[in-house]
Image (cartoon, rainbow, N blue to C red):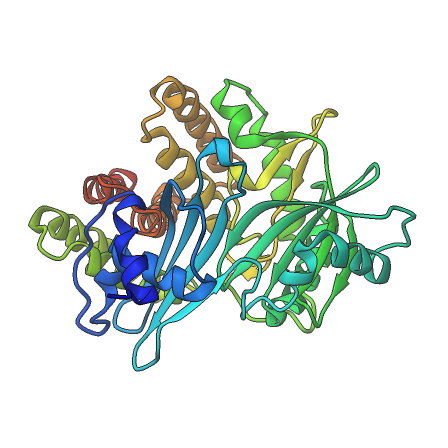
Length: 414
């Protein structure tokens, strides 16, 4: 008896494992949520999208899980073949939306990033560079995928001869705020990538590459960049003139409440984690409700966003959130990321990060005369938001990591 294409695909599912193997709570508003972590269901959706494959992959790996409880869920995956097959990995995503059909899209055909397909293809990328950046004699652009978050943004690297450009592809609505942020950051004493060109219709921006060492790695290896360098840079950024079209201010309440919904969903059935959550929000809810933007700020300031240059200066390589916000929150966010990293499994680097965090905190309090409690509340609020990473990048021990992260919130509050 002849078999259908779906039956043939199902027969090959056992050879395509899904990693990591995780279990998340059910979402009554999205009945099909568990399907996103079922190997057979995921593999069938992929094959329906790309057609039958002559060579089965080695595995499908979960990269990221984005979830708004009761409304939407998106999981991005990487299809990986055995090294001896010399087949490049394939990126795809599956989106569930309440009362909508399942949506599958494959890199670089992302319906939410209109410029990605052309920017990711070496031939069309060359045309884009010639039209929006500079005329080049090269016959081809070498394209490297640095980062890809389906439906949200991608970072590519374009190599044209000796020229190296970072390319950000985003939703078209994100272009004006980023251009505005680039102007603001340019008034500070931080080094910033040069804006080499942009294609507004395609949601694409080209930035010059800056040679330097990642600050997170620098701290992890024991590098002692003087906190004064960072604090002086922040002061010049905070004093930037507020533009008349300053855009939307930083929305801490919205981001905090979104994180709270995610964490409430994730701790279902875990009474100890729920107790940690109740204790955290008891202190953070009143703070967030009373919080107001107070001045110019970076609004996403932390070590992985910066480079240490050979001349000792610091470069900001990610600055798109810059605008009206809260200077104390910039410092609190920096401290939160250092505390989180110190709590990670990288035991050999825990001490260096803790030492630098304490050094930076003391320097900020002495320089600006802030209240320790005010800074602690902001650090705790930022740690609370970082806790969602344990769900966004799920691992088999995600529940333990989330519970441990919520305990860090309490630690930051003292």
